[in-house]
Amino acid sequence: MKVSPLTSAGFKLEKILPVDVKRATVVAFFAWVFAVYDFILFGTLLPEIGKHYNWDAATQAEIATFVAIGTAIIAFGIGPLLDRVGRKAALLWTVAGAALCSGLTVLGGAMGQWPLVLIRSLSGLGYAEETVNATYLNELYSAADDPRLNRNKGFIYSLVQGGWPIGALIASGLTALLLPRIGWQGCFIFATFPAIVIFFMTRRLKESPQFLLHKRIKQLREGGQDTDARALASEHRVDYEQHARAGLREAFRGDALRATLVLGGGILLNWSAIQVFSVLGTTVLTRVHNVSFENSLLILVLSNVIGYCGYLSHGWIGDKIGRRNTLAIGWMCGGLAFAGMLLGPSSYAVVVALYSLGLFFLIGPYSAALFFIGESYPTAIRGTGSSIVHAMGPVGAILAGVGVTSMLNHGVDWLHAALWFGALPCFLSGVLIFFAKHVNPERIH
Image 1: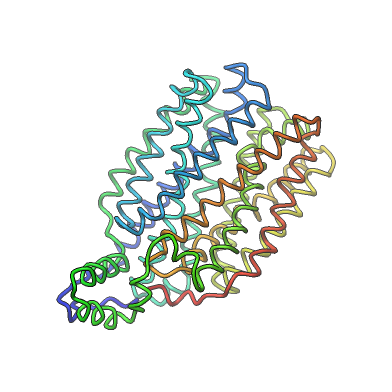
Image 2: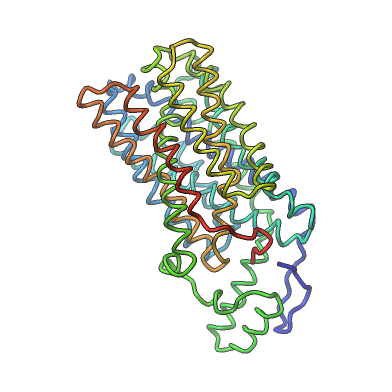
């Protein structure tokens, strides 16, 4: 979308400058890093929390499942908020939610399982930050009207999305460093302070021009100025009728229906693997290959360094061969790598190599996935559609939690539980993405 200084309807859009793009990219990166830090911290410390309150493995898996349910509900609600109040305001909400969740986790554990579940459900705000970042930055990069930026925006966004392995790396590294000194409660309290700083940094960002334009068209239309609304839409070369359609049901109509079903299904399956190999990664490593908890943290640190390289690689490849193909092939390779890790020998070197390779192909493609999801919807429902697809992640985690818990309660070991609810869904998620429609990334309006 090219931004002209003044429209025929007397509406002015402020030009997006390179400094605006850089500031938004940096803030979004740090916001995502510490949202992931809080998100992964809970899964990493769940064995320690369970030990503190005498919760067995099945109880811990059950807690993780109900937390995923709450996360899905809250993350789903961010989409309509994103399309109604704007990208910047939604980012402020998610950053504040992540900080609040970290601080209250200590109190939740002391009050019992259900208060902890309710508090940890607020992590859905931090998880939804992924959708907000992708929607906001995709629109901002396009509005900057920089051909070089548009050609490489997938790779640039991969630097932001790379906050996932960095956040996981920080969670693992600081846990190993701080846990013996300040306990698991102190680790969560520590996590609140960076989020507070980021909240105030976010207040300086500019709103997305695409959202401002959509908002103005909507105001004119609802005010009975249909002619001015159409003129404004025509000047900016956007589909007026498409902008007139908004709301949850529009994500299940026309071309949006295919995107919702295919991408939502792919994310659901893939998050089953994320629940098993990332959120509960320490449990899988300790139970399947008898790795000590301390060594499992070290493996998470090493593998997430590889995972960050995966983000950069898939972001760059997505700009070259298309985000859909990059996403599909990556997830299929990830499923194969995790299957090899589970079924292979308990050699420390082999476990590290295959687990790292699995994370490379499991989380790396999300640098292409989040932009691809946003590109699959028009501005009027970009937040809503993206949030529906994104909310399928916790649903996949829920199904994985239920499946793993059921298998463990029936005497099945962690190896086979992780194989059926981790490696296989990861592979199938890649297969499903091939059914998504190709979109032109240059047409983001």
